[in-house]
Image (cartoon, rainbow over all chains, first blue to last red; front, side, top):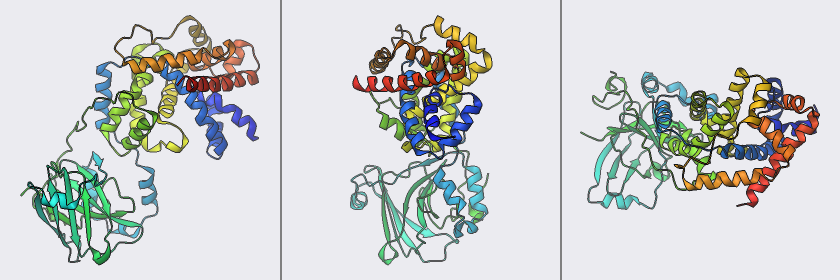
Length: 236
Length: 215
Protein backbone atom coordinates (compact mmCIF):
# COMPACT_ATOMS: atom_id res chain seq x y z
CA UNK A 1 0.00 0.00 0.00
CA UNK A 2 1.24 3.48 -0.77
CA UNK A 3 1.44 6.07 1.90
CA UNK A 4 -1.21 8.64 1.04
CA UNK A 5 -4.16 6.29 1.14
CA UNK A 6 -2.99 5.33 4.63
CA UNK A 7 -3.00 8.87 6.04
CA UNK A 8 -6.46 9.14 4.45
CA UNK A 9 -7.49 6.23 6.64
CA UNK A 10 -6.48 7.93 9.87
CA UNK A 11 -9.79 9.77 10.39
CA UNK A 12 -11.77 6.54 10.10
CA UNK A 13 -9.39 4.98 12.62
CA UNK A 14 -9.75 7.93 15.02
CA UNK A 15 -13.55 7.57 14.82
CA UNK A 16 -13.36 3.77 15.20
CA UNK A 17 -15.16 3.59 11.86
CA UNK A 18 -13.12 0.68 10.53
CA UNK A 19 -13.92 -2.97 10.14
CA UNK A 20 -11.75 -5.39 12.11
CA UNK A 21 -9.62 -6.10 9.05
CA UNK A 22 -9.09 -2.42 8.17
CA UNK A 23 -8.19 -1.74 11.78
CA UNK A 24 -5.57 -4.50 11.89
CA UNK A 25 -3.99 -3.35 8.62
CA UNK A 26 -3.88 0.27 9.70
CA UNK A 27 -2.38 -0.55 13.09
CA UNK A 28 0.36 -2.59 11.43
CA UNK A 29 1.17 0.36 9.18
CA UNK A 30 0.99 2.82 12.07
CA UNK A 31 3.84 1.12 13.93
CA UNK A 32 6.26 1.97 11.13
CA UNK A 33 4.94 5.37 10.01
CA UNK A 34 5.74 8.46 12.10
CA UNK A 35 3.70 10.66 9.77
CA UNK A 36 0.55 8.64 10.25
CA UNK A 37 1.17 8.64 14.01
CA UNK A 38 1.37 12.40 13.92
CA UNK A 39 -1.72 12.84 11.75
CA UNK A 40 -3.62 10.37 13.91
CA UNK A 41 -2.72 12.13 17.17
CA UNK A 42 -4.32 15.33 15.84
CA UNK A 43 -7.43 13.55 14.58
CA UNK A 44 -7.84 11.67 17.85
CA UNK A 45 -7.80 14.99 19.70
CA UNK A 46 -10.73 15.99 17.49
CA UNK A 47 -12.55 12.72 18.15
CA UNK A 48 -11.91 13.09 21.90
CA UNK A 49 -13.84 16.38 21.76
CA UNK A 50 -16.90 14.42 20.64
CA UNK A 51 -16.50 12.32 23.76
CA UNK A 52 -16.07 15.32 26.01
CA UNK A 53 -19.31 16.77 24.68
CA UNK A 54 -21.04 13.73 26.23
CA UNK A 55 -19.65 14.23 29.73
CA UNK A 56 -22.36 13.47 32.25
CA UNK A 57 -22.92 12.41 35.81
CA UNK A 58 -20.87 9.65 37.40
CA UNK A 59 -22.88 7.73 40.02
CA UNK A 60 -21.01 7.51 43.33
CA UNK A 61 -21.52 3.73 43.36
CA UNK A 62 -19.86 3.41 39.97
CA UNK A 63 -16.93 5.47 41.18
CA UNK A 64 -16.46 3.36 44.29
CA UNK A 65 -16.78 0.12 42.36
CA UNK A 66 -14.02 1.08 39.93
CA UNK A 67 -11.65 2.54 42.51
CA UNK A 68 -12.10 -0.51 44.74
CA UNK A 69 -11.56 -2.85 41.82
CA UNK A 70 -8.20 -1.41 40.84
CA UNK A 71 -6.82 -2.09 44.33
CA UNK A 72 -6.83 -5.80 43.43
CA UNK A 73 -6.17 -5.41 39.71
CA UNK A 74 -2.64 -6.30 38.57
CA UNK A 75 -0.95 -3.97 36.11
CA UNK A 76 1.16 -4.60 33.06
CA UNK A 77 4.79 -3.93 33.95
CA UNK A 78 6.37 -0.66 32.89
CA UNK A 79 8.26 -0.97 29.63
CA UNK A 80 11.50 0.18 31.20
CA UNK A 81 11.35 -2.65 33.71
CA UNK A 82 10.65 -5.13 30.92
CA UNK A 83 13.61 -3.77 29.00
CA UNK A 84 15.82 -4.06 32.06
CA UNK A 85 14.75 -7.64 32.61
CA UNK A 86 15.27 -8.53 28.95
CA UNK A 87 18.99 -7.76 29.01
CA UNK A 88 19.44 -10.04 32.02
CA UNK A 89 22.12 -8.14 33.90
CA UNK A 90 24.58 -10.25 35.91
CA UNK A 91 23.06 -9.40 39.28
CA UNK A 92 19.86 -11.18 38.36
CA UNK A 93 21.69 -14.47 38.72
CA UNK A 94 22.05 -13.64 42.40
CA UNK A 95 18.34 -13.65 43.05
CA UNK A 96 17.74 -15.92 45.98
CA UNK A 97 14.71 -17.52 47.48
CA UNK A 98 13.90 -14.47 49.52
CA UNK A 99 13.54 -12.27 46.47
CA UNK A 100 11.13 -14.75 44.99
CA UNK A 101 9.16 -14.76 48.23
CA UNK A 102 9.05 -10.99 48.20
CA UNK A 103 7.74 -10.85 44.67
CA UNK A 104 5.11 -13.45 45.42
CA UNK A 105 3.90 -11.76 48.58
CA UNK A 106 3.72 -8.25 47.23
CA UNK A 107 0.44 -7.33 45.68
CA UNK A 108 0.76 -3.62 46.08
CA UNK A 109 3.86 -1.62 45.32
CA UNK A 110 3.90 2.11 45.54
CA UNK A 111 6.67 4.11 44.00
CA UNK A 112 7.90 7.09 45.90
CA UNK A 113 10.12 9.57 44.19
CA UNK A 114 13.08 10.88 46.12
CA UNK A 115 12.97 14.63 46.15
CA UNK A 116 14.69 16.95 48.51
CA UNK A 117 11.90 19.51 48.21
CA UNK A 118 14.04 22.16 49.88
CA UNK A 119 14.62 20.15 53.05
CA UNK A 120 18.31 19.57 53.70
CA UNK A 121 20.05 16.74 55.52
CA UNK A 122 20.93 19.28 58.22
CA UNK A 123 17.27 20.21 58.71
CA UNK A 124 16.40 16.59 59.39
CA UNK A 125 19.35 15.90 61.70
CA UNK A 126 18.78 19.00 63.79
CA UNK A 127 15.01 18.57 64.06
CA UNK A 128 13.84 18.28 67.65
CA UNK A 129 12.06 15.00 66.88
CA UNK A 130 14.83 13.43 64.80
CA UNK A 131 15.10 9.65 65.19
CA UNK A 132 18.42 8.03 64.30
CA UNK A 133 18.85 4.32 63.65
CA UNK A 134 21.98 2.42 62.68
CA UNK A 135 22.16 0.83 59.28
CA UNK A 136 24.10 -2.43 58.80
CA UNK A 137 24.89 -4.94 56.07
CA UNK A 138 23.00 -8.24 55.88
CA UNK A 139 24.89 -11.53 55.46
CA UNK A 140 24.39 -11.09 51.69
CA UNK A 141 26.93 -8.27 51.66
CA UNK A 142 30.55 -8.86 52.66
CA UNK A 143 31.65 -5.21 52.55
CA UNK A 144 32.03 -3.21 55.77
CA UNK A 145 29.22 -0.75 55.27
CA UNK A 146 27.96 1.40 58.05
CA UNK A 147 25.76 4.41 58.32
CA UNK A 148 22.62 5.90 59.75
CA UNK A 149 19.06 6.50 58.79
CA UNK A 150 17.53 9.62 60.34
CA UNK A 151 13.97 10.78 60.04
CA UNK A 152 11.85 13.61 61.35
CA UNK A 153 8.07 13.80 61.28
CA UNK A 154 8.10 17.59 61.58
CA UNK A 155 10.37 17.88 58.55
CA UNK A 156 8.47 15.04 56.77
CA UNK A 157 11.83 13.85 55.51
CA UNK A 158 14.54 11.27 56.06
CA UNK A 159 18.28 11.15 55.48
CA UNK A 160 20.24 8.04 54.62
CA UNK A 161 24.00 8.26 55.14
CA UNK A 162 26.27 5.38 54.18
CA UNK A 163 30.03 4.84 54.11
CA UNK A 164 32.04 1.99 52.62
CA UNK A 165 29.48 1.30 49.93
CA UNK A 166 30.92 -0.89 47.10
CA UNK A 167 30.71 0.66 43.63
CA UNK A 168 28.10 -0.68 41.25
CA UNK A 169 28.34 -0.89 37.45
CA UNK A 170 27.18 1.90 35.14
CA UNK A 171 23.97 0.04 34.43
CA UNK A 172 23.06 -0.50 38.07
CA UNK A 173 22.01 1.53 41.08
CA UNK A 174 21.31 1.10 44.77
CA UNK A 175 17.67 1.48 45.71
CA UNK A 176 16.03 2.14 49.05
CA UNK A 177 12.81 0.33 50.07
CA UNK A 178 10.35 0.96 52.87
CA UNK A 179 9.09 -2.39 54.10
CA UNK A 180 5.82 -2.50 56.00
CA UNK A 181 2.39 -3.81 55.14
CA UNK A 182 3.43 -3.03 51.60
CA UNK A 183 6.90 -2.61 50.16
CA UNK A 184 7.36 0.85 48.76
CA UNK A 185 10.09 1.77 46.32
CA UNK A 186 12.05 4.89 47.13
CA UNK A 187 15.25 6.65 46.16
CA UNK A 188 17.89 5.25 43.86
CA UNK A 189 21.46 6.34 44.45
CA UNK A 190 25.06 5.46 43.65
CA UNK A 191 28.04 6.05 45.94
CA UNK A 192 30.19 9.09 45.31
CA UNK A 193 33.80 9.82 46.26
CA UNK A 194 35.12 7.74 49.11
CA UNK A 195 32.24 5.28 48.59
CA UNK A 196 30.00 7.48 50.74
CA UNK A 197 26.51 8.67 50.01
CA UNK A 198 23.93 10.94 51.59
CA UNK A 199 20.36 10.82 50.34
CA UNK A 200 17.52 13.08 51.45
CA UNK A 201 14.08 11.50 51.01
CA UNK A 202 10.89 13.56 51.16
CA UNK A 203 9.02 11.22 53.42
CA UNK A 204 9.30 9.39 56.70
CA UNK A 205 9.04 5.62 57.10
CA UNK A 206 5.41 5.91 58.20
CA UNK A 207 4.18 2.39 59.01
CA UNK A 208 7.27 0.72 57.58
CA UNK A 209 9.02 -1.57 60.07
CA UNK A 210 12.36 -1.50 58.32
CA UNK A 211 14.27 -0.11 55.43
CA UNK A 212 16.20 -2.23 52.95
CA UNK A 213 18.69 -1.46 50.23
CA UNK A 214 19.18 -3.57 47.11
CA UNK A 215 21.05 -3.30 43.83
CA UNK A 216 18.71 -2.73 40.88
CA UNK A 217 19.01 -1.94 37.18
CA UNK A 218 19.62 1.74 36.43
CA UNK A 219 16.49 3.77 36.95
CA UNK A 220 15.33 1.53 39.77
CA UNK A 221 12.63 -1.12 40.00
CA UNK A 222 9.03 -1.25 41.14
CA UNK A 223 9.84 -4.09 43.50
CA UNK A 224 13.11 -5.54 44.79
CA UNK A 225 14.66 -7.96 42.31
CA UNK A 226 17.74 -8.89 44.37
CA UNK A 227 18.41 -9.67 48.03
CA UNK A 228 18.49 -6.90 50.58
CA UNK A 229 22.14 -6.00 51.20
CA UNK A 230 21.79 -3.32 53.84
CA UNK A 231 19.00 -2.85 56.33
CA UNK A 232 17.84 -1.06 59.46
CA UNK A 233 15.00 -1.89 61.80
CA UNK A 234 12.88 1.12 62.58
CA UNK A 235 10.53 0.23 65.40
CA UNK A 236 12.25 -1.79 68.05
CA UNK B 1 3.33 -16.58 57.32
CA UNK B 2 6.82 -16.28 56.05
CA UNK B 3 9.45 -14.85 58.27
CA UNK B 4 12.37 -13.21 56.65
CA UNK B 5 14.97 -13.90 59.29
CA UNK B 6 15.69 -17.41 58.09
CA UNK B 7 16.35 -16.32 54.54
CA UNK B 8 19.15 -13.86 54.79
CA UNK B 9 17.30 -10.77 55.92
CA UNK B 10 18.70 -9.49 59.13
CA UNK B 11 15.29 -8.51 60.32
CA UNK B 12 14.40 -10.38 63.46
CA UNK B 13 10.85 -11.67 63.39
CA UNK B 14 9.23 -9.32 60.92
CA UNK B 15 6.65 -11.18 58.95
CA UNK B 16 5.24 -10.06 55.64
CA UNK B 17 1.53 -9.77 55.91
CA UNK B 18 -1.12 -9.39 53.26
CA UNK B 19 -0.89 -5.90 51.82
CA UNK B 20 -3.47 -3.60 53.27
CA UNK B 21 -6.25 -2.81 50.87
CA UNK B 22 -7.67 0.57 49.99
CA UNK B 23 -4.56 2.48 50.90
CA UNK B 24 -5.41 5.12 48.38
CA UNK B 25 -6.99 8.27 49.59
CA UNK B 26 -9.67 10.01 47.66
CA UNK B 27 -8.75 13.60 47.12
CA UNK B 28 -10.86 16.37 45.74
CA UNK B 29 -10.09 16.88 42.07
CA UNK B 30 -8.36 20.12 41.24
CA UNK B 31 -10.89 22.68 40.00
CA UNK B 32 -9.78 22.59 36.38
CA UNK B 33 -7.20 19.93 35.63
CA UNK B 34 -5.41 20.57 32.36
CA UNK B 35 -4.35 18.07 29.71
CA UNK B 36 -0.85 18.01 31.22
CA UNK B 37 -2.26 16.99 34.62
CA UNK B 38 -4.13 14.10 33.04
CA UNK B 39 -1.02 12.95 31.19
CA UNK B 40 0.97 13.01 34.42
CA UNK B 41 -1.70 11.15 36.41
CA UNK B 42 -1.84 8.42 33.80
CA UNK B 43 1.95 8.06 33.83
CA UNK B 44 1.88 7.93 37.65
CA UNK B 45 -0.91 5.34 37.55
CA UNK B 46 1.44 3.08 35.61
CA UNK B 47 3.63 2.81 38.71
CA UNK B 48 0.75 1.72 40.88
CA UNK B 49 -0.23 5.15 42.17
CA UNK B 50 -3.88 4.67 43.09
CA UNK B 51 -4.21 8.28 44.25
CA UNK B 52 -3.19 9.50 40.80
CA UNK B 53 -5.60 7.09 39.18
CA UNK B 54 -8.40 8.42 41.38
CA UNK B 55 -7.67 11.95 40.15
CA UNK B 56 -7.55 10.73 36.58
CA UNK B 57 -10.82 8.90 37.12
CA UNK B 58 -12.56 12.03 38.37
CA UNK B 59 -11.36 13.96 35.33
CA UNK B 60 -12.23 11.45 32.60
CA UNK B 61 -15.00 9.21 33.97
CA UNK B 62 -17.80 11.72 33.14
CA UNK B 63 -16.84 11.58 29.45
CA UNK B 64 -16.04 7.83 29.45
CA UNK B 65 -19.46 7.05 30.89
CA UNK B 66 -21.08 9.67 28.64
CA UNK B 67 -19.61 8.13 25.49
CA UNK B 68 -20.66 4.64 26.56
CA UNK B 69 -24.23 5.83 27.29
CA UNK B 70 -24.48 7.74 24.04
CA UNK B 71 -23.25 4.85 21.89
CA UNK B 72 -24.76 1.91 23.78
CA UNK B 73 -27.85 3.66 25.17
CA UNK B 74 -28.65 0.92 27.66
CA UNK B 75 -27.35 2.50 30.86
CA UNK B 76 -26.56 -0.72 32.72
CA UNK B 77 -24.61 -2.06 29.75
CA UNK B 78 -22.91 1.32 29.33
CA UNK B 79 -21.72 1.26 32.95
CA UNK B 80 -20.41 -2.24 32.48
CA UNK B 81 -18.40 -1.18 29.42
CA UNK B 82 -17.20 2.03 31.09
CA UNK B 83 -15.98 0.03 34.09
CA UNK B 84 -14.09 -2.37 31.81
CA UNK B 85 -12.52 0.64 30.08
CA UNK B 86 -11.35 2.24 33.33
CA UNK B 87 -9.87 -1.07 34.51
CA UNK B 88 -8.16 -1.45 31.14
CA UNK B 89 -6.69 2.04 31.56
CA UNK B 90 -5.33 1.05 34.98
CA UNK B 91 -3.91 -2.26 33.74
CA UNK B 92 -2.29 -0.94 30.59
CA UNK B 93 -1.27 2.53 31.83
CA UNK B 94 2.37 1.63 31.14
CA UNK B 95 1.55 1.47 27.45
CA UNK B 96 0.55 5.14 27.34
CA UNK B 97 3.19 7.10 25.44
CA UNK B 98 2.84 10.87 25.99
CA UNK B 99 4.85 11.42 22.79
CA UNK B 100 2.03 9.86 20.79
CA UNK B 101 -0.93 11.83 22.07
CA UNK B 102 -2.83 13.04 25.10
CA UNK B 103 -4.12 10.87 27.93
CA UNK B 104 -7.66 12.15 27.29
CA UNK B 105 -7.51 11.11 23.63
CA UNK B 106 -6.05 7.74 24.52
CA UNK B 107 -8.70 7.01 27.14
CA UNK B 108 -11.68 8.34 25.18
CA UNK B 109 -10.56 6.51 22.01
CA UNK B 110 -10.45 3.30 24.04
CA UNK B 111 -13.84 4.03 25.62
CA UNK B 112 -15.40 4.75 22.24
CA UNK B 113 -13.87 1.67 20.66
CA UNK B 114 -15.15 -0.66 23.39
CA UNK B 115 -18.61 0.92 23.19
CA UNK B 116 -18.67 0.59 19.41
CA UNK B 117 -17.48 -3.02 19.57
CA UNK B 118 -20.33 -3.73 21.95
CA UNK B 119 -23.12 -2.20 19.83
CA UNK B 120 -21.79 -3.79 16.67
CA UNK B 121 -22.24 -7.17 18.33
CA UNK B 122 -25.73 -6.29 19.52
CA UNK B 123 -27.32 -4.36 16.67
CA UNK B 124 -27.31 -4.21 12.86
CA UNK B 125 -25.83 -1.24 11.01
CA UNK B 126 -29.33 -0.21 9.98
CA UNK B 127 -30.67 -0.14 13.53
CA UNK B 128 -27.66 1.86 14.64
CA UNK B 129 -28.04 4.38 11.80
CA UNK B 130 -31.74 4.83 12.53
CA UNK B 131 -31.10 5.47 16.21
CA UNK B 132 -28.58 8.23 15.45
CA UNK B 133 -31.31 10.18 13.70
CA UNK B 134 -33.98 9.48 16.28
CA UNK B 135 -32.24 10.10 19.55
CA UNK B 136 -30.55 13.17 20.80
CA UNK B 137 -27.63 13.15 23.20
CA UNK B 138 -28.23 11.59 26.58
CA UNK B 139 -26.07 14.26 28.18
CA UNK B 140 -29.04 16.53 28.54
CA UNK B 141 -29.01 19.99 30.00
CA UNK B 142 -30.87 18.90 33.12
CA UNK B 143 -27.68 17.51 34.61
CA UNK B 144 -27.10 20.06 37.33
CA UNK B 145 -24.59 18.40 39.62
CA UNK B 146 -21.61 18.80 37.33
CA UNK B 147 -18.90 21.30 37.96
CA UNK B 148 -19.44 24.48 36.02
CA UNK B 149 -16.13 24.05 34.33
CA UNK B 150 -17.27 20.79 32.73
CA UNK B 151 -20.44 22.39 31.47
CA UNK B 152 -18.37 25.19 29.95
CA UNK B 153 -16.16 22.72 28.17
CA UNK B 154 -19.17 20.79 26.89
CA UNK B 155 -20.77 23.95 25.58
CA UNK B 156 -17.57 24.89 23.84
CA UNK B 157 -17.39 21.51 22.10
CA UNK B 158 -21.03 21.78 21.03
CA UNK B 159 -20.48 25.24 19.60
CA UNK B 160 -17.48 23.88 17.70
CA UNK B 161 -19.67 21.07 16.33
CA UNK B 162 -21.99 23.70 14.85
CA UNK B 163 -19.15 24.88 12.65
CA UNK B 164 -19.19 21.63 10.64
CA UNK B 165 -21.10 21.39 7.40
CA UNK B 166 -24.30 19.34 7.63
CA UNK B 167 -22.72 16.57 5.58
CA UNK B 168 -19.61 16.47 7.74
CA UNK B 169 -21.69 16.39 10.91
CA UNK B 170 -24.00 13.70 9.59
CA UNK B 171 -21.05 11.49 8.62
CA UNK B 172 -19.26 11.97 11.92
CA UNK B 173 -22.43 11.32 13.92
CA UNK B 174 -23.09 8.08 12.09
CA UNK B 175 -19.54 6.98 12.82
CA UNK B 176 -19.16 8.22 16.37
CA UNK B 177 -22.63 7.86 17.84
CA UNK B 178 -23.90 5.08 15.58
CA UNK B 179 -20.76 2.98 15.53
CA UNK B 180 -21.03 2.53 11.76
CA UNK B 181 -17.92 1.64 9.78
CA UNK B 182 -16.89 3.89 6.91
CA UNK B 183 -18.21 1.32 4.43
CA UNK B 184 -21.54 1.09 6.25
CA UNK B 185 -21.82 4.88 6.15
CA UNK B 186 -21.07 4.93 2.41
CA UNK B 187 -23.83 2.37 1.83
CA UNK B 188 -26.28 4.08 4.18
CA UNK B 189 -25.81 7.49 2.52
CA UNK B 190 -25.27 6.06 -0.96
CA UNK B 191 -22.08 8.09 -1.23
CA UNK B 192 -18.62 7.03 -2.49
CA UNK B 193 -16.25 5.80 0.24
CA UNK B 194 -13.62 8.41 -0.70
CA UNK B 195 -16.11 11.21 -0.02
CA UNK B 196 -16.96 9.73 3.38
CA UNK B 197 -13.27 9.61 4.26
CA UNK B 198 -12.77 13.26 3.29
CA UNK B 199 -15.78 14.36 5.31
CA UNK B 200 -14.52 12.57 8.38
CA UNK B 201 -11.02 14.01 8.03
CA UNK B 202 -12.17 17.57 7.27
CA UNK B 203 -14.88 17.41 9.92
CA UNK B 204 -12.47 16.36 12.68
CA UNK B 205 -10.00 19.03 11.55
CA UNK B 206 -12.66 21.76 11.62
CA UNK B 207 -13.95 20.57 14.97
CA UNK B 208 -10.53 20.79 16.54
CA UNK B 209 -9.61 24.19 15.12
CA UNK B 210 -13.03 25.65 15.99
CA UNK B 211 -12.63 24.37 19.55
CA UNK B 212 -9.16 25.82 19.88
CA UNK B 213 -10.18 29.19 18.45
CA UNK B 214 -12.91 29.47 21.09
CA UNK B 215 -10.39 29.27 23.94
